[in-house]
Amino acid sequence: MEKKDIDWGNLGFGYVKTDYRYVSNFKGGAWDEGGLITDDTVTISECACVLQYAQTVFEGMKAYTTEDGRIVTFRPDLNAERMENSAKRLEMPAFPRDRFVEAVVETVKANAAYVPPYGSGATLYVRPFMFGSNAVIGVKPAEEYQFRVFTTPVGPYFKGGVKPLTIRVSDFDRAAPCGTGHIKAGLNYAMSLHAIVDAHKNGFDENMYLDPKTRTKVEETGGANFLFVTKDGKVVTPKSDSILPSITRRSLIYVAKEYLGLEAEEREIYFDEVKDFAECGLCGTAAVISPVGKIVDHGKEICFPSGMTEMGPITKKLYDTLTGIQMGRIEAPKGWLQVIE
Ligand SMILES: *Cc1c(COP(=O)(O)O)cnc(C)c1O
Image 1 (cartoon, rainbow, N blue to C red):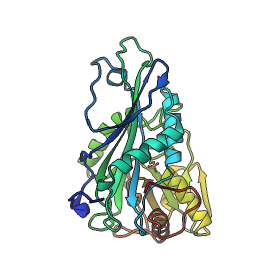
Image 2 (image 1 turned 90 degrees about the horizontal axis):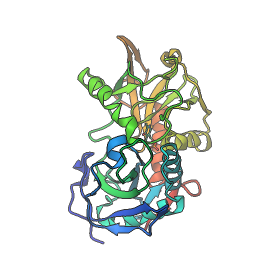
Image 3 (image 1 turned 120 degrees about the vertical axis):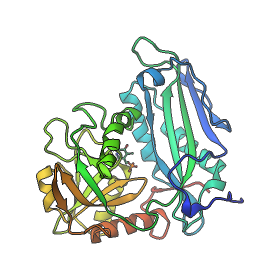
Image 4 (image 1 turned 180 degrees about the horizontal axis):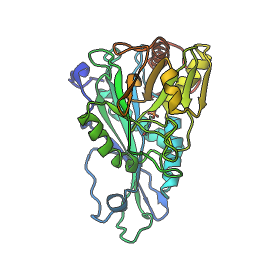
């Protein structure tokens, strides 16, 4: 198969239309057969539940080429499970997990010409999502839904080298106690837009959100989970009911324990402890781990010993091991790589 003529190394993170997308519609209490289409537009009622009441959930994952030339995705079964949980919380019908994985595989396969070659650093970003599509004016869940998967090629995350982030402690909350912080829903992002624009205006890369109830514990940023390393080399990540269960973070904890022989634990982390950590990173599909060099709490700076020019040593080991597993250079735990072709 001939690859598209794209300058992979210089791609950014923007939407590039690819040839095929997968669509299935839910009507009369059942999902239809679904299949690939070429039309990248959606036509729905002006009163669709998604437009009026934000009834929509999504997922994000990547397809890429491994060292030995296979096209794979990373743990799509976990995305399927998480989307089911997100859908349930918004009173949407679950899209069956096995069909979710099949839809991802089919869509990537159909767009194989857009899967960047090994070594380019670029990947094919895969976006499954679902929304309430029929007209709803009185507040209630929709009766009809569309599930859709599209792909878009994205460039290397650390273009021009690693640059540790500077983040601030936010005065805004991203999730309410007992709210929707643990599901992957557009609504969590809509309300974070003001906070991120304001952070950028003030010279920060990201917001650190604290727990909305007590504002004493670390939660996450707008789109990534925190990972810290203690001075004695232990990996710790925040435990909370209102953060999104990152698949990258869960995989890194496993890698820390099983591949690197490190102690790793998920527990409540008080903001007061953060100044004592040796390393800090943000984990998510986009970067795997993006190092944090500095956290600013209302003028008070916490500077991690790892500094502002490189990843901390343990962060680097975690990054190299997980990306090695993803790219097929290091043997993956059973079931982590879904081979597409
Ligand atoms: C998607 C997302 C993450 C990262 O999850 P991954 O599965 O690792 O990509 C973290 N936080 C939020 C709020 C997210 O939406």
